[in-house]
Length: 98
Image (cartoon, rainbow, N blue to C red; front, side, top):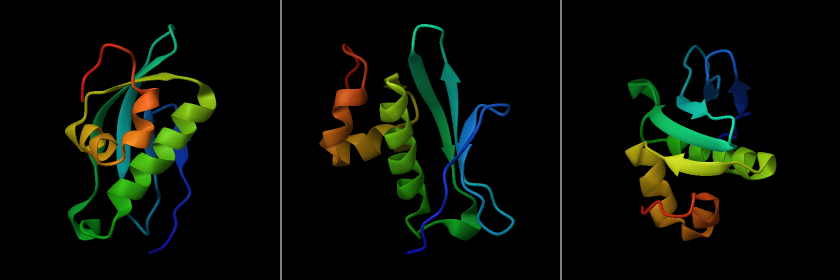
């Protein structure tokens, strides 16, 4: 599987990859309190089934960890990824169940 560079597009409020002419993305909202809400993940149909969505979530979680943000995963795809990879639960804000 090809490895893609994570881009934090702060103007569009999304993490993204640039894959040929496609832009898989995770949209977010960041609060002034150090919380990040991951609201929506989108992988173009032409790229589905290649592990790109999982790679995007993993790299996004690394970035959130590096920035010391508290995570609220509103997106079902992100929540499902964390459920399958419980090592990431430490990022999830206390009181949030996945």
